[in-house]
Length: 139
Image (tube, rainbow, N blue to C red; front, side, top):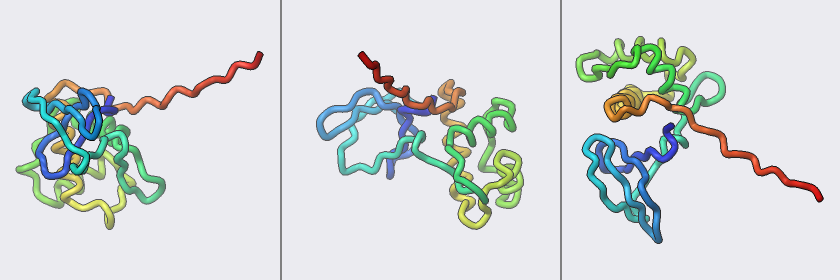
């Protein structure tokens, strides 16, 4: 599940939310296991809130990562050796309807690096569970 996995602006890698408190969060870096505090002023983005632009409706990041996992056969993707056009062709296999005007190469590279971090950390369930609906009981 990508719920609770965070990206923090200005800091490399991805982080798992450990605890939230008054005005700060405690996060653990997925690649090193190192814990650190994150203040309110830091820009924190949950991967569950990210979506990719397509020619139709935006696609949640969890669905894109699942498709990427299937295309890459569960293996990490070597981002550094692939040329720009090769990345676009590869990403077209992952998400054929992605908006080629609004999704930049830097976005694709970031997505692939996030995917590699998640797979290396053993996270391969990219679903984002729907919040459970509260049921009202009538008496």
